[in-house]
Image 1 (spheres, helix red, strand yellow):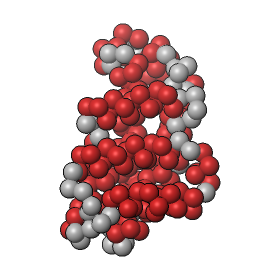
Image 2 (spheres, rainbow, N blue to C red):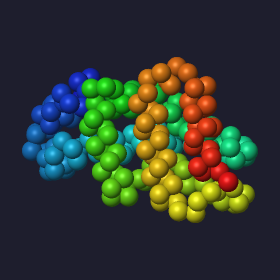
Image 3 (spheres, helix red, strand yellow):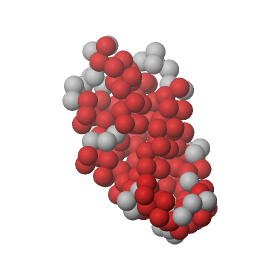
Image 4 (tube, rainbow, N blue to C red):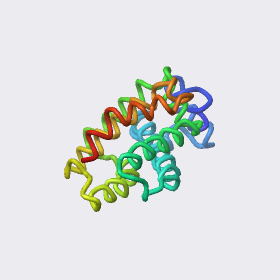
Length: 176
């Protein structure tokens, strides 16, 4: 991960990773088929860490509208405070990160986002406030929204703008 933080995704090579890990390049290839597979594994691990941190900060007792908004804001804040996520979402790396997210969406491999959103959506369902019962597609859509918001630098310094967007567009699509 240090290589990606130091060099960025595009400039980091498998040789850089091997050198930083103190192993041969072949050892890295024994674990990861290619750089894309390595990036996917790193993105998945960081997404799990960030989403777990964010979920710990979410008050599941909030009103339904507020729950959705504050959950996404907690997730955005945790991502923005992660040095690795900051690299992954930088203009230089966002293309590779977007490809990784697209692959996860295509395969339905959204473990970290599912772990984050399931308790929130469970609360909404329990309250009969969940607009759509299609959990998989709801989480996929929320993942796309999160990635889009996370890549907007202006929202990093203006959570009220993010809150406004979430209230206007996300809440009506999730909360009944």
